[in-house]
Image 1 (spheres, rainbow, N blue to C red):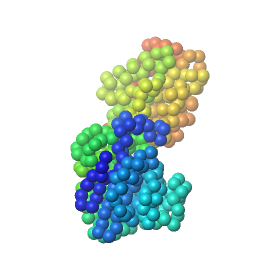
Image 2: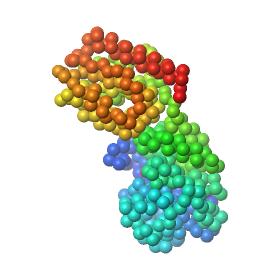
Image 3: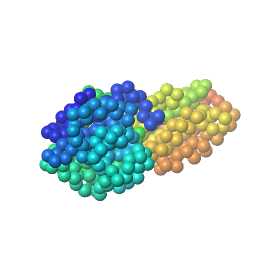
Image 4: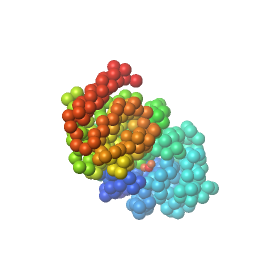
Length: 394
Ligand code: FEO
């Protein structure tokens, strides 16, 4: 892709990674992603905001071939999908200075071996004049690492937000428009990397709400030219409100746990509760993460393998704990062969989840009427608890 002009003196650069399917060797990317950099040319100086994943540095080098001078390389975030090509750009422009937050300096030196004397740190709110264009830097920790910051270009009313408000989606469109699939991709992105820092994200949202901008230019996905859509979506995701939904990750070895899961899904649906059910041998964990963004309850379904939970359930529960969703309630159901410690072991996996445990329904072997009655009772308890939240939402 060639550079694309956003407005006079401001260009999108970067690489669209249509074929990437996994991030951090963990996160599924069903729609690929992009690594966006932005070139801002003032009357006196030129700045490059972020770079690209080093695997695609040649794309960026090609785009920069006709750019004679870069004075500043702004690094919003040290994770290598944005900073990894800074050393190559520094070689192309030996006089360029790297601009970053105080916390990023140490990280850029550690991760990329950038010489300290080529780094200039900025303080929160500090400005840098390029001549007729002024970059204003705002520290926004934990979107996504502790060192992250954003840049505001007041003259053109653009906010460059890096990971914050971004989306893993490959597209030939420069702008998101009002495409709901971009908001969907942004929700997946929020769920996978921002949700553990929800309170910090709340604070950063308030901070950028104090700025006036028409466009948000993130470092993944298209530019938001209707920024209210992404801002209001984020405000919903980070709020303390939960939805009348249950996330139900499970696996079954011989079918008994699956019978229990299907019975509970039906019992919850009869009570007006939406269930997001994820069979863990086939599911996309990104979808489970998305469902956890606003669910009120998680019900974990597991058979017992050598006394403990199935390893796939162990892994999914560990992930849910790491993502720190705003769940209020939890329950565990499942079948076992002759004995089990699955409940104790799962309970030990979720210290980050500030949930009220609503109970467990365990069954030796295949479920009979007594187990199904217990599942009905659990569904009724969940309905009552959700109803109480709607009466007292905060
Ligand atoms: Fe897109 Fe946290 O890196």
